Amino acid sequence: MVDIYPRSNQPQGRYTNIEHAGTDCFSSRDKIHYTGHRGVGLAAESELQPGGVMTLRLQLVIRIAVVLIASLGLSSVAIYWHAVRKVDIEMHAAMMVAAHTVNNAIADLNESANPPHSLRVMVAGFDGDRHLRASLIAPDDVAIATSKLLIPRNHAPEWFHRVFATPALTTRIGLPGRFAALGAILLEADSHNEVDEAWNDAILSLTLLAAFSSLVLGSVYWTLGRAFGPLDQMAAAFARIGRGDYRPRLAESGPLELIRVCRGFNQMASRLADMQRRNRRLGAQLVVVQEEERAELARNLHDDIAPLLFAVSADVASIQKDDTARSSAKIRSRLEAIRETIVQMQQVVRGILGLLRPHVVTELGLVHAVDNLVAFWRKRYPSIDLETRLGSNSFGDRLDETVYRVIQEALSNAMRHGHPTLIKIAAKREADGHVAVEVTDDGGGLRDLADDAGFGLAGMHERVKAVGGTLMVKNRMDDRGVIVSARLPSDDLAEPVLGQRLPALAPK
Image (cartoon, rainbow, N blue to C red):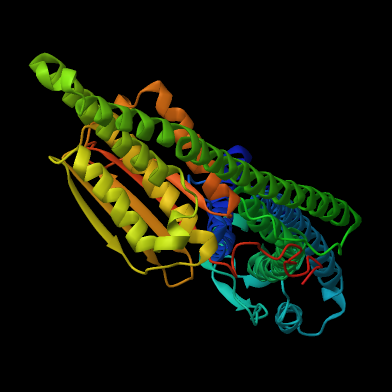
């Protein structure tokens, strides 16, 4: 008689527990891979831009990593359901085979000379079985003989057994007729070996999947690094273009898309450089025209106005000698006032000539020219303190004129609009060869500048641009006055060599 006991009638509870435990299992594995992903993120911390914006390379790697982790999770679920089904099928199949074997052995007992011994031999025949334990049970339910299960080499963790172990599956086969006094055969299914096998299969599958995912992620990261690496050079080149340096050129190599972008960049940079050269030539021509106009005004004052003032002064002196003029105190006082006015006008004309004459710097040198300029303003504004620090008597013929004109215009604006009490003038050659000019006052600041001062500032900008320099006019940090600073390249830096190439953009 065969009596097969069904599995526990708790499938819902069992599967609920399996889902929970399986979640714990997969969560731990997910954490392992997530830690690996964090490693990639730490290695790419330099790809986090200011403001927390990630590069395209890092975004793609993270998205691919998420897909791979999701694939690992789905694979783990598939492995789990396959293992549960396999353990269940193997246990039932082993029980059916064992029951068939026992029934055949019981049928042969009638021919055995020693039935108890034959039963023990039959039970011992199950020694080393992977899934089943057989026992000879006496009528008082005492085990007379029990087979030994195969001892597995690799044991699965206990929690894994709890997840995959099937409910107890047993079969009790009673001995018929005259052999009933010998007891019964008890067959017990044991899923440990099958669960251990499922553990080894899961470890192997997940390891291969994890290795494959790591290789894919590493390959994608490396490939994207080679593909996007040139973009860093391109960004650096655009940054230099934005700062007004049109020398960078990109190597037209690599993928077709990069070649097109690099070619367009080089054409743009070439056109900007050509426009810069044209602007500089126009600026230089404008400065020449301005100097010619100043020279023409100076000549007109010297050749036309000065002689007229001298003639009027001579006429006044002649009238003063006349007896009629001497006899009238009122006439004498009026003539004396006219003479003093003419003297003042002559002084003003000489001062204007000093400001207009373009060769004043060449004749006197920069230091003396600036000293004369300072003396000119001190005479008119004696209450204003002017400090001068010039690092050299000359910065070169080309730059001395520009330095002088910047100081001249800055002083004029400060005196006319700033109402300062102190003006500091400084010019020096820096370590990189540039000449730095700075005029600082403690007046009212840029907010008090009148509209007509804009022409002077525009003229300064044009002069500085003409020699390839930069000019900055801003309020002081304490809003007490204005800082006018110019940075002028020396003769060997004035005209940059265009066409400088950046490192090749071919994949590394």
